[in-house]
Amino acid sequence: MMMKALNKNGYYFDLNTMTLHMTNAYERKTLVYGSPECYEVLKYQRRFPEMTIEVHKRKPSSNKPLPYKMMKAYIAIMPNAAAMLEEFERVQKASVAFKSPYKYVEKWFKGQFPNYEMFVKYDENGNLVWKVTNLMTEANREAEAAKQQEEQTSEGNEEERCEADAAPQTSSDDVEVEAVTASQKMVA
Image (cartoon, rainbow, N blue to C red; front, side, top):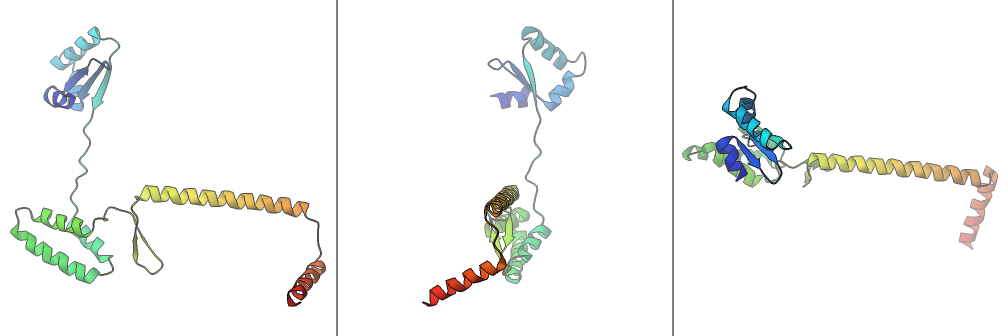
């Protein structure tokens, strides 16, 4: 209901929350003194002095098309790149017969490579290893692991210092004698 009213009128007043919702364009119109939109907002402010105003800005579309050049570059990093590039060329040529050639190729590409938008890593052999998590999650995990490793090494160093302080000092001759006696026990 609210979205329909916002699209139709440019504003919507919610009595439950005492909030006047308006579009960005409607807000610009209210800033012009003497305009009908300005008087409308003033009417609501007089009637409901405790009301809040919320401006809804449209989010830019995230459906940007994926260029053929990007598709080719992605296919080129695959293990069987030559065969896949040949198939990509065939699909591009076949797409001319369809009403929307680009959509045909994009649908094929997303069907072949569903993990296109996922973060990838290479193993020691140079093969792709797919990660289901995105780049930020992976970076956060790596940072946490490095932090934990740093904490463990600092704790280990403290324990070694404490043990070194508490342990009696032995000479190198004592160590050699202990090693010899241990090896003699194993022989016997």
